[in-house]
Image 1 (cartoon, helix red, strand yellow):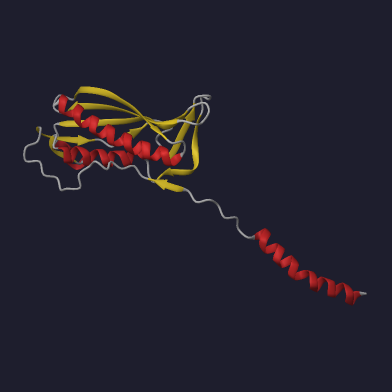
Image 2 (cartoon, rainbow, N blue to C red):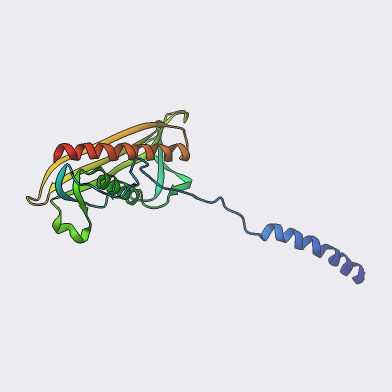
Length: 208
């Protein structure tokens, strides 16, 4: 009797091992996709502005983001709800304010609106200071989740550092139709970034 029981246990052991491998093996999670923000209209040529629009230097402060847009999460909302949600498996590769500040700096530098742009170490050489604030950046869906737009709202201030006064301020509020979902949202935000960069270039020319 004991021998029969031992034989049954021996025969059952491989089955338990196989079953255990399936139960105890780690569950593979879906990888998170990381996206960047780029202004593809920025010239790749080296900066050369022999005849700038304004012969002064501007300091571009790092863009600040208001909550909840001060995170690298990607937000969307629907008409039928007052809530905003985040895409679970998609996010910005870095803070969107950092990504857009980088592109904006390159755009201003290559557009020759000013003689040059200053770093934080050379702030004393600058005549102007540009401040930007990310107020809203998300994808907005209709009540049926069939149509969507990307929306980007950024506030800007231009400060005269000699008088320490605000010369001008403006809120840029732009939207663009997109396909529903993170891929369409990313393409939309990149287009809106290019649009914003050009708008702020035109605005700076008018103010200086």
